Structure formats: structure tokens, C-alpha cells
Length: 194
Figure 1 (tube, helix red, strand yellow):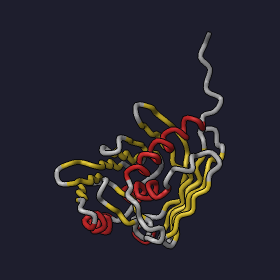
Figure 2 (tube, one colour):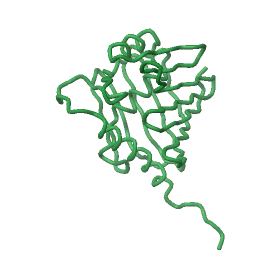
Figure 3 (tube, rainbow, N blue to C red):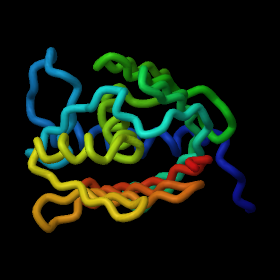
């Protein structure tokens, strides 16, 4: 019997978000709900999300996202509009099925989805986005505050805890590759980043 293409590609998208979201929830310690949005880049490094004005360059575009987590590969599309006012993302399956909306404005995050798991913490999506697209001087200061170091080389970035490599970000005009060595996931964003 010949293999047929899966009829529900969104299942392939739900799994990595679910696993990453659950892992990140397990790694975060209890914080007051009225704190400014933050994530734990390591178990003890509390990174406070930067204001939207820290973005290096505004964007309004589709991005093809290829992700890998625990040996599995996933593909989906995000329409991203980001500027000094905020970040807005619309998440779509490969076939264009609407999967959710994410917005970060004035220090507050709004996330709605009927497909992705409720345990997914959108703060982690925003943090990864900031590591890729925000001003390196601002990022460097914010990472210093949580005892991490940002190294930049050409278009690449690395986040370290002492000598341990936590994140590596490789940037090209049409692709950005983010690898989180500590949490064990990676993804490639494809779009016009020139």
C-alpha cells in the first residue's frame, strides 16, 4: 500500500509547540502575574522582554518556518508584522489554515488559538523573535542583567552562560537559523530579511 500525504498537517505543527511550551513551563519558576512579561532562557536566567522599540528593522511579511524538536521536523507559515509599535503574528498551516494569532504591544501579550495547546507560553516565541531581530546593544544589556553574554560576529549571534553555548543564531538575507542547545530545538525562518 502506498503512503499517502497526511490529511491533517496541523497535527505536525501542534506537537513541537506543545512540547516546547510544556518544557518551558517546567523550567520557569513561579513569578507574580503582574510582572513584566519574561521567560527563563536557562533555569535561573530571567529575561525580561524588551519594548517593541528595540526592533532593528520593521517587517511585514510571510515567513516559512521549518522547526525540529526531538528528532522530528515540522513546517508552517507565519505572517509577521513587527515595528516599533509591536509584534503581530498570524500562524497558518502549510495549507493556509488559520491556527492562531499572537500580539505583543505595550508590554502585554495576547495569544488566541483554537488548535495549539493552551500550555504554550507565547512569551517564549516573542523572546526568540527578539533574539533574532532586536538591536544587539539592547539585547546585550538585557542578557547581561540575567547573567548571560551576547556575542555578535557579522550577522551571527550567540548567547552564552559562561563558556556554555545556549543559543546560536545564523542570519542570511533570506534565512535565519536559530538553535537552542539547552532546550534542544531549532528552526529556520525563510523570508526576505535583507
